[in-house]
Length: 98
Image 1: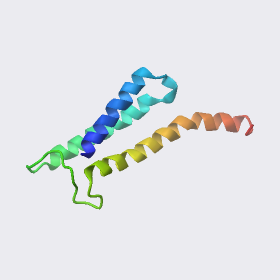
Image 2: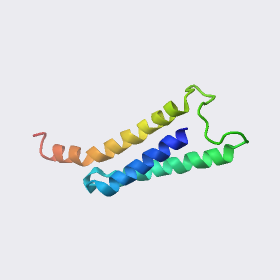
Image 3: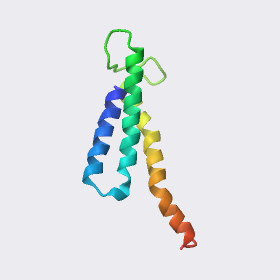
């Protein structure tokens, strides 16, 4: 399920990149999400041992596949927000904190 959530997020980010202004750096966000989607797909392909390809539950600490997918998006969104606001922070510091 985390493959599907990452794939849908990558699609949405790519659509927003085409529709909205370029100042939001959505190209960077969509690139990170497509990279994560490809990595998860490769992991699924290499670890596939039969049975359902898309798992709804996990054997790990987080049992829900949907919740795991959403939690995997948090670091990507944090990195995107940091990259988005770095130029604003630099401009703020150059002006002396006004």
